[in-house]
Every structure is written in C-alpha cells, then in structure tokens.
Length: 259
Image 1 (cartoon, one colour):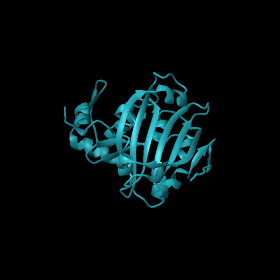
Image 2 (cartoon, rainbow, N blue to C red):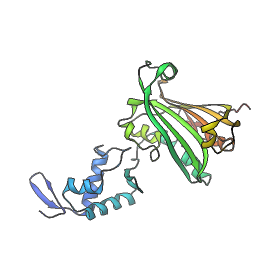
Image 3 (tube, rainbow, N blue to C red):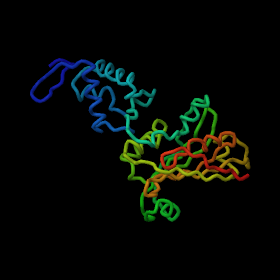
Image 4 (cartoon, rainbow, N blue to C red):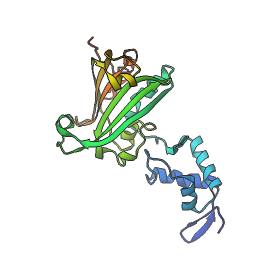
C-alpha cells in the first residue's frame, strides 16, 4: 500500500490532499472532530489515514484557507465555528467590539476550575447546591493593555468536554451556539467598586482605584440562566460592555452607571 492511500470498505485508494481535506471536513461536520477542541496532530492524522505527514499538512492548509481550521503557534490546529442558522450569532462579543474600535483583542486565562454551585450559584442558576459549575477567570486585553477581569460561571454539563476547551481561543457564545444553546436575553447590571492587590496588578492600576463592576446574566427563552459573569473593567473601556446588548432578537442599550 502506498503511503498516501486509505482503505474504504474493501477498496484501497490513493488520496489527494483535497480528498483528505474533504474527509476531515466531513468528520468536523459529523462532530467526530469537535468544535472547541484541537484537531488531532499531523502525526496522529497521518497514522490514522495511513498517509504521509506532508499530505496531511497540505490538507490542513487548505482547510485553514477556507476558515474551517486555524493554526495557533505552540498550541496546535483548532476547529473554527461552523455556519449555524441562529439569530444569537449577531450578538457582538467583546473581541468583535474591540476590533471595530481599532484594538487587537487578546485574553489570558488566569484560572479554570470545576466547583459546586453552593448557595449563591444555586440561586442564580436555579439548581441544587451540589450541581457542578465550571468557572473561567480571564484577563481581557486590547493592544496588550489590560481592559478587564472576567469571572464567568456556567453549568458544567452544558458544554461537552468543557474542561479541555481552550478559552483563549474559543468564545463562550460560539460554544453555546454549536451546542444548540440559544441565548434569548443578556442583561447587564452596572455599579462601581475599588480594586486591590491581585486585581489591581492585573489591571495595571493602583490599589483603591475605582473601576466599573458589571454583572452579566445570559438566559434562554424559558428564563433558564446559562451564564453568569462578574466583570471588573477599567472605566475607559466600560462602554464596550454596554454596546450590543441582545434581548428578544434585537439590540438594546439599557445601562446606567451609578458613580
């Protein structure tokens, strides 16, 4: 058998990189290769399909050109969002808003963990206190400058393999859409607070500096909460948390900052 052939049924056929790209595309569409996780390595794919790594590399390059895959240096090749007919995809996430304003958005994951809901989150999510909640603590940046600290909580079982997802690469809202979780309402509640110690250092601010505090709650059509996020944001960037509020299929800006 040649190094660029694969057995389909009882038939052995030579593969072109275009044919291999089509096979990988079909596995993505069937969720055998899952959005939110890295594609198997070139070595693993070459072994799986009994083809050369150069053929795998060419197939991946084609799918990257099509926007189906994207390479991240030092991390691997990741599956990008498929086209999904879902009105919630029009909600503008922070990265999109920052790009529109001329910033190069990025983020740094400070911590992820699975924990029990406890009293506070059992009330927010309307679940038992023993229900598992997944937490993502993230520093948002624009042009490498700190913008905000986001502490996000979601139901652990709402997204498969959630503990293996790289949230520096994937948007939570994209993950919701690919798992058929359709956000109906996103509400923002604004107040102010002061940052100290670690939070102040992450935001490159002095202790006791005033910042904007935002509670973000996302829910489904039946009012089931699927996301709760607490945000500490530098005041000059707080406007990006008021743009593009999505409610009942339309944009609404309904925010008031009390100083």
